[in-house]
Image (cartoon, rainbow, N blue to C red):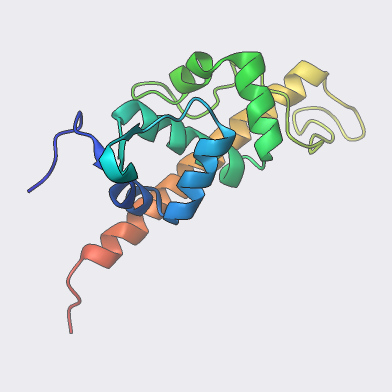
Length: 158
């Protein structure tokens, strides 16, 4: 039986849905005070839907965007958790929209492809293009993850 979207999830359910080991989730709890699962007697964790979205956001920033833990902490402090989660909310165009000014985790911006050879675009334009590329990469990675899950669940035909 499927749980409702508002239902609390155990650490095992969350770890399976995010394709992460449970110890990683427990570690992130120590590094990100924004992730606060409900702990019952015996220390069993129950994650709220908001906690799961925050974990999904942290995973995307760390694994897909290339941020370090310290970088994500600075990003949360500078941009605020609500601004970042709004960019990842259902109905928005994607993860870390270019409208949210995010400093790249590393200097990957070279010459702008829209400019002539050897010319450089402005820093805001390069950052916007880089964020658009990152958003596209996240969507591609998510599609690959969904495809892999579908393959795992599909019965094999022989």
